[in-house]
Length: 331
Image 1 (cartoon, rainbow, N blue to C red):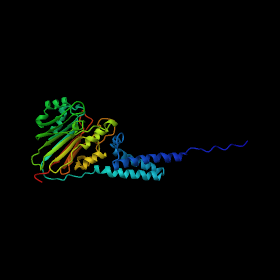
Image 2 (image 1 turned 60 degrees about the vertical axis):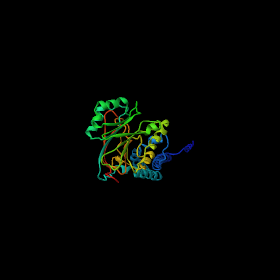
Image 3 (image 1 turned 45 degrees about the horizontal axis):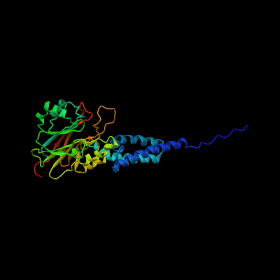
Image 4 (image 1 turned 120 degrees about the vertical axis):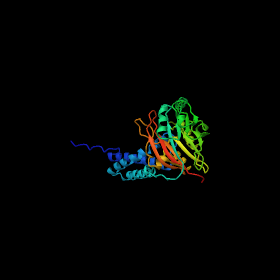
């Protein structure tokens, strides 16, 4: 009796399957890096996914090592290119650019998303007092929290207020030690969340100062993408006759093209300038990776001297406390 020959396999062998799998991973990394580099993210879910570019950068060397150990050299080359593109864009945020050490009046600013008004008023007042805050930008301020802040004594520290509080997450306020002028609301202009814009005159500063408490609609679902984009595009550019500061919950990181477009209007990100740009600010206390979506953007003529990023009870957002120096005198 003669043995019958074994049938030859008709499908891809294990080596081909591994090659295909590694290639798909490499293509995924490279496409992600190119989307980030070229600013091609459009709509949901690409926009939310771009918030985690630093995590993708951390994973790229692991994938590259795996491809190299498996001797899939084309895939390894694609992963190396993806890593270089991401590292070039992201790693400079961890490098301290230092203060410009200019002379002029100082201004201490704090921004915080108080999470549907759930942060206790006395917690906010304590932060203002402890850090010597002169300008406060709050997001998601309800009318009840606004009343609580007054009762807790915020007015004794920061007597001037632009109050655009509203139910749930729709409100925002600006508080100051210097007189404020209500200059409108970027968010209300587009029918979205409040983003009050206030003017103040800081003694000794070369120009008037404006601040926007920033809070565009979060890009959590397809239906909010247009409002998210419109909110960021509605932010004012810097100008020759005014020093502007944009502070708040941008619902965007520096890896989003829309945020970089705002920076191109003449702003500097305080955290990235001082080497803290990779510190996540949300969601604190949740088993999720943290993204740096809360920012202080300052006119590039303003010196960023220091920045503290603080956990605050009652909110998944971290507070940012920035020490700024404004240009002095007439320019």
